[in-house]
Length: 281
Image (cartoon, rainbow, N blue to C red; front, top):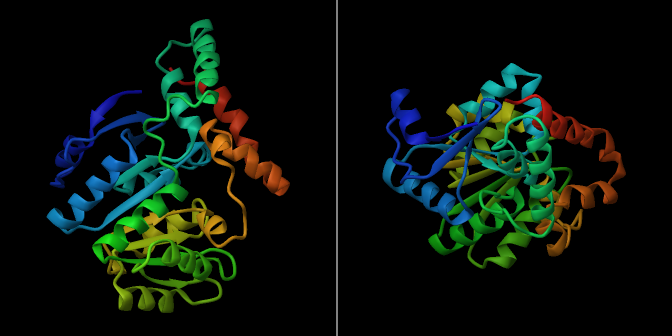
């Protein structure tokens, strides 16, 4: 694991992007944005206003890491995105644990860091995709920007849009359920007609990143983000974990209790913990 400047990395690739100084840290071949939500919003605003480039933001959690670990194509897709934010307390835990060498010291650090996280500490660098939607919507309403919501089950994109517009008066938004209900050509046309500042894609992990990679060049927008199941919360289809649960980093457990069918998917978490404790140098 190492800290490095994303700006230098992009310059080496021939892309001149003003990141205004944020730092990144690396694990399993993926570089993660290490600052807070306020810095992220500043970076996004800077890219939109100064560079005028499209920005692809990926919200990464341990499930992403484990899926990418077994799929080099998915790893490549994640790394094509411009900014990878940490959307899972497990990655914060891993970052701190990996500061100790493998062996008893790492196991002890894993325990102590875990206890600190349960007490609400070590939150810096954690940016929940669901929270990010709220902050972006607030900023968009203030700056008279536009948001497009794509995907989600049934009417969850439309209901999420209504919720956000009520929460932030003046917010301009549009929505589309997307495939398979709406053909992709029509999806692209609707997005481009609206020309959003922010496109939120809720097709689920991996599928949404693959869709973004295939279609990004065709889209008229400024920022695109894969937001997973976030529309479930803001449409009212699923109650989000209470604040004290989120503070402890146990939102994943709360969701599992609410939706036991997610059990099989959550089996990757013990594998992630074992990988951090025993496999990564």
